Length: 486
Image (cartoon, rainbow, N blue to C red; front, side, top):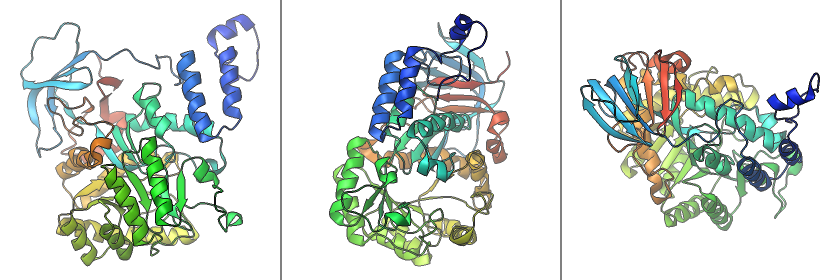
């Protein structure tokens, strides 16, 4: 996996510039190529990379940056994540990974601090995606179902950095084996957003998330499918089983739990009208999550499925595109969050066929009604993109935000993708891996911020072109991109 194609010329010189021939690399390669189990890969990656001190990213920079110092941003206009207008003529001081001060004027630069003149540009909080799949976003489904776990994690690390550079400094991962992946980001081994992990998505037999081939049906008790062994999904068929699987995810560090209550677009054998878990099963999951002082988020499209999730104790529903007026009213009355996506056409899903296309067209046709109901009943609504199985789709993460202009003002959209989504992240209570202030620019908040070349309050489309519109991307007090001249 890591060996170069050949040795030509001066072998000594080539080894000086190429890591392929180091004994440590050969050891790491043999371990990954052995197609380790999920737990084996996690242990191998941590031991090999951390112990050897090898750079995990293919860039000429330290894998573990020095502790962040102070940065003074001057001559900046600020969208704070809550207000509908900008504040002009400000400076913002970052110390460590927090915002130390925001005030008017241009102060003296603190000793040892980096000073950045923002030249009157707009600074805003880092974006938050409430429905993301860190390892599934940019890899085709056949690769995920058959691929080597080492390759999947390495490809995921490249996408994690691209996600960060698109301005998304925090994501809520709604299903996938990302516990070690999150740890690698938090420890600075790879660049990427903060991750609120669910771990395996928990589904009933035959439900969305059960991706077994039909040759593996019927299910053999005690025998796990490939997706279960990798930690991508957990298949349950009773309240007791779901309790066990929920506890397993929480034990590994899940900040909240993803329950699959009904059919989905990307699973051809589960049309959207299906309800695939009993109320007793969903309630069992909600009770365990409550015991752990966190919550369950339930994947559901149809009215009956959404209502069952709410009645069983769900505090957040994912998608819900097909819900009706009565269901929306129930959601509002119970104070349940709606985390959903503005899917409008196959540009947002990729070209689909067969049952997948039928389900996608149902979603496209229902999206307008969904957001109108959310506004009518003032439902707490979060933004998530849910891009899957394609690097081209993953790049549309910011474009999905621009779709919201059909129902919301630019300031409402920016607020939703920053401070409102941060409120949803905080729903995990003591299981919150990042308990500081997210999604806002104010004293004491995490230093997750973007400097935009233009005003997104006037032109939200700037966030669809982050490669040119985002001048600075800072996460946790560390600058990951800076294209300002001088």
